Image: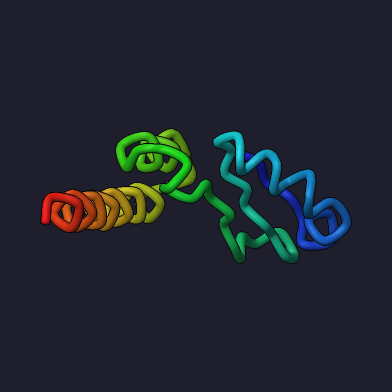
Length: 87
């Protein structure tokens, strides 16, 4: 996980977007407080790998809950996609 100020993100957005494309998570902070998280799109990787990116983050309990919720949603989307392809 990479933490960056909003100002630094604005100045080098393309660079940070490239990092996200390669699997990194970028947390954008304003006045020292996290305000946004840029994560890889699940279309670039499996749902499990995307959820594992969140699990590796050690910020706290809420992030773990967010990772679990995201994993559940990705599993749901994967099931819906598989169902749609089967029909």
